[in-house]
Image (tube, rainbow over all chains, first blue to last red; front, side, top):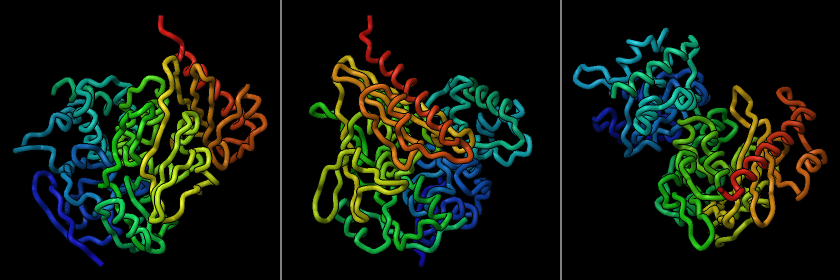
Length: 154
Length: 264
């Protein structure tokens, strides 16, 4: 059984057919081809599937596609505008905020949520905000520095 | 992991939600941060998920000496609460899960999920909260002390919804606190304690150490915890958990007393 859900993704209205049980991450990846939301743990621990829903970071593996109906979503694909990288993306390049890059989309979107509410977070606040994101390259120091730099640049 | 097939229905108001919940094996979903993980593990296989997240049951309002907390209020919203005497609520909310969970997870959903390691039940117990429940038969009030009957088991009927969480605002000169020691990987409390200190006395409640959270009798918390039924597991054997419970109880009490002390 499927129904239509409609949301605005990265500024564009999109709609697709989903089942009642369809998770948002699957709707984005398989339905809309937005594979920037990664599937890591699939158990709500790793945060690599993080997207913004109405501006707030959520784990898209733990949201039903139906729950996002009518909402505004931002995935990593929607962060750069007119070919210009977002301040966070630039900072991650400049401050070695990624190694393998698998966790990066989720970490950048979680950081976007943090910086939207607190433009100059302390390192403790950055680390607290990253509690739900795992980096298995253990590059946390570079990640914290990147987020701090992006906050200062904004 | 993909949940078992289910239907989705969005409730337009409370009456509609109660009607949709009339179906066998229906489950209400709010933030989904407890329900979706257990659906993915297929521990929960609801025939229909009734989305109550857009109902008008959200927000925090002080009125007539009590605080009304809408059950759909998220942890992120509770983390910003600045109510003298009720510091434990925001302190506890800030430590729950992670940013993503706090953005969606709701206090009502968490309470009725009744995870024995859940943090906020200890706070609600120490503060003497009351839940207002609504079913098709009507509305009733249940003291938080009567809500938890076992791990993941509550006093609620299957087709009953929490519609209000009422917390008495303590008199001036009161302070409260929440302290816990978490499992470093899962973040769940190995032991958590909430304390309220004020002119009317002191109350302490413990979570994470037994089948349900519980309030301590008045008197020395360490003595009361010594007599409580505590469970152990491979992460924290019984004896260690009992000691942790006493430590977090003392920490919460010390902070609550400091907050209650008149400022000079």
